[in-house]
Image (cartoon, rainbow, N blue to C red; front, side, top):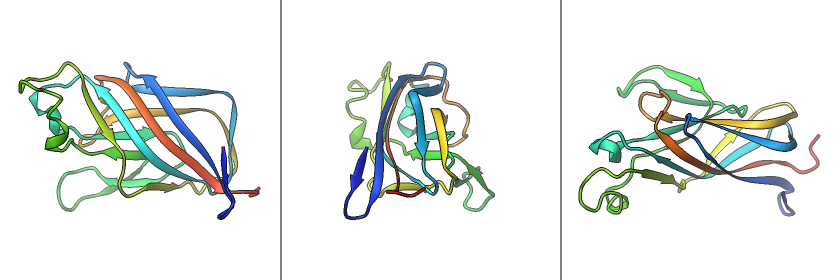
Length: 170
């Protein structure tokens, strides 16, 4: 826990890791975590290791779903226009850049394990607009970024984020 004296905001930093063979990651805390009202969530980084489904794995994009009280809107289709839906997606992980994947398959084959890491250049922030709540666990699910179906071949998942609120806020 960290308190920024200049802005008087309390920050709780998380770096959560887990093996995710069933696609769901549940992190349970030893004691309940108090989240103050109107807190914000800032995503720092995401790393996902998975078994690629074929040679097109380089174009895979991922979405990370959570049960934290956040709101995000996204389009369910790849068309330019379409309906937007509300979901609790904390972050989208874009496909790898060509220069980032050269180590994945040095002989132009499909690797046994692929890794996507994402550290946003522009901060991903979510305003929770919540009442004060106490939680014992946080759940995450790795989805395919295009179809939003569970990514069944996920092996490991890591996320770094920060929950922030006004210091002294009741």
